[in-house]
Length: 163
Length: 313
Image (cartoon, rainbow over all chains, first blue to last red; front, side, top):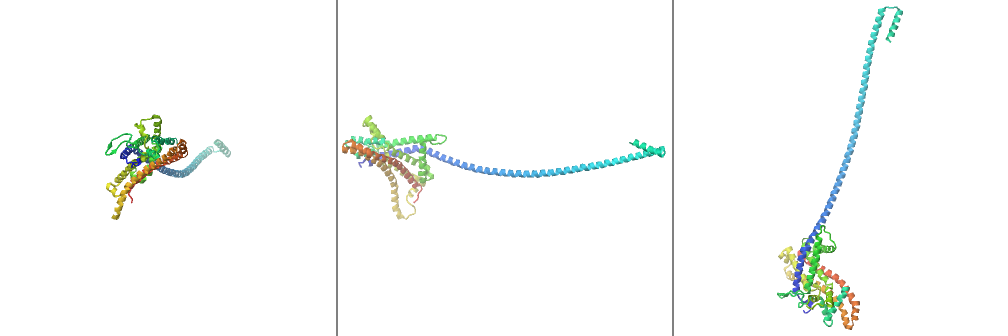
């Protein structure tokens, strides 16, 4: 046991344990502990970021789908509105046309009736005038009791007067 | 390369003091701890244990201080930022922390205990790796040269004494044994925390076997309990010693040949042709060994702790 390579050295043995434990305690407290915690924190942060990104993607897809649905629905509605308004316009036009026609018919009928009434009145008036003239002619003939020539002259005079 | 050339001179220094070059003595002197008869700092002996600070104790403190300052400063600077963006050395440190947490701790101790044992495993790795690696840098050989040629410090001075002895504290089995003791105790603590004290000891052997088998199994498992840290102790110490001895032995050729032919030329020739290229190659290999041994110690500690937590027979 004279070889220093195999010399037992309890002092060195104990110093090693003490040195190692002190180093372990110091490093664990000031270096490894905080670092492992930070690494775990970073791992959690990365995981969360990835999860968030996945969630955002899903959300975006959902929104995209939803918006497509909304657009499709709006288009359908617009189509319906256009169709309906076209039909409405058609109906309105038809109605207006019918109304205009009816009105025109009414105006024409009215005019005809008025014309008829005016004609009748005119005829009546002419008839009255004729009666009056006849009466006047007759009275004149009676008053003067003239010869045939005189009569004819008188009729001519009267006719001239009429004009 | 330059460092190795300097290292090459170091045995010369040791050889000179001995008068005649003795390769074995020089190598042992460069690998083993400085003796307790000439410690760096004299401390009292308590209960028969000499607590004097030898070279390896000094190296342990140096490594622990360097590791603590570098690691803590880097991590503190990193955590002080608003947005945690690792830069520079922190990238490497973070990669190491995540590697040990995700590839060593998690598969062995499980998710539930990972944050309990990762600091221990991380400290094992950085401490053992740094203690191994500092032995590859001929810091004290350079210091010895400077002292020998420039400073001429007194034999009793701290500087003159600190250059003696091996720089790799993990090449000393007292050190690795102490580290393995930490693993040994961690296994018991882990088992006790996971299953309770009594249950942990019951877990050593499988349940529900015929009683004669227990007569065989209990001693085997008890032996296994001690064999595990013993293997850790020997593996690390022997690996750390072996490479250094190989490098020093190869470099000793320079001085052996010089003495053999009584000519410096022979030694320098052999040194440039054989010793330096081989020593460079082994040093390169040592870089791998230094990493691998730190990794193996950490991994096996994690495996043993994991075995105490997840008992399957």
